[in-house]
Image 1 (cartoon, rainbow, N blue to C red):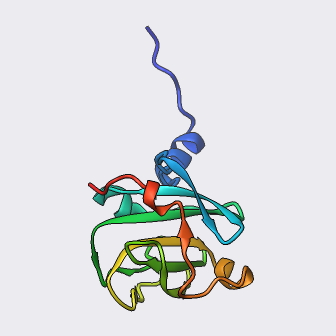
Image 2 (image 1 turned 180 degrees about the vertical axis):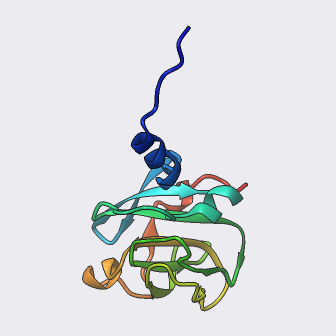
Length: 147
């Protein structure tokens, strides 16, 4: 049986293309009357991958990081091509602080106090909606247990 032929261009594209992101579960969250579709990173592998290698993200889409315990978690932007804002959340989904993060940097952006979750959205999403520290993200109680 003949083997399929891959042209040198096709082979080069396959070898240099960033990996497609894994399909993560998506859940609905709310911030006031704003609806968020959040991909959920609830295990260590998904949390480490985060939004790396993404070229775009729809306007009301984000990623919810579910941590195994509340702590002063930090995020960075290695291999992340999108400018993002991250809201660190306590156990009840209250925003502790919001940090803006620039693409492809290794600057640490940390929770102001013990955070159980982090929600990444396109940069300035929170400020453009008037959402500030102290606001509550609804639906967080339905997030999967971390692994």
